[in-house]
Length: 396
Image (tube, rainbow, N blue to C red; front, top):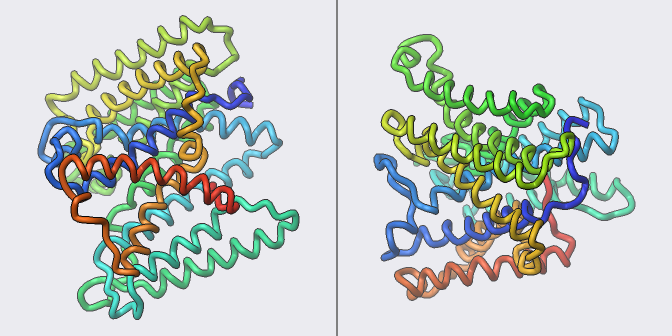
């Protein structure tokens, strides 16, 4: 075992994950609504600011970080060797990258005529294959599960060959960017490697947060662009996102590492110190590296991570200490099925596109649109709950 962590389910982490997924569905949907307040929109690329919408993605990265120590130690407790653990991390990373790549290519630059099928059909087939590959099966005979996964993998390969893009239809699937899931995948991989190499040492991980910020700064130097090291510069976004995941790991160790019998009060003090340091460093860096989600600047990363520290501390106090946790049952389906919850809207829109359906115009603007987006996010929770009853539950 790398760290001595509690073996019980931490409700506050689950609640944080569920709330984040719920809000993520809402902000993704409300982005298409006209006439909404500016604080409900992503800030533009040239602006030095952030709204609560710009904290949703880093909140998910942060939760990924909080979950890494538990996931790693859980597999080690079951007897996994280092190679088995490394293989599991690599498989999860590949899954996130593949899903992100397919999702991005289904949204733009496709050529239906060259593909010989509607993009909606291609997208639905992609999600069907993804579900076959990453569904949690309960068959007693593993051969059935492996066969279904094999069919899904074969389907993804065929769909990748079928795909065509560009005006002339000669382009194959391209990596314009990795999509949200792909970005999470890279950050998860880097942070997991750091956690394993440092053997869960909280000081070493904290130092690596500073290293990530420093590497980002170096990548922005003009000298890097004019040298043979310019290949590093495009990866500064992955490095910045990794810093957020590492912050989540540190906070998880502050609250749940039982190697030292730290009083609860002291855990909150250390969490407060971590948040304060993140806010202070973000403020110091802001004149040179403005707050920008799109550019993944250090100030945005550190402010977001600091906000997540405060939010989780409040949830931990309310749910785990004060035992005010009955309400968490509502977000439990989203917390237990984050991947299924995330891809479900894309499946719905592909199906609606295939059937030439659309939401009523009243849902496209103003307060009715905002209310609809809230209702939509809540409805998806119940849809996911129903899919779970049908034995559909995704896990990378």
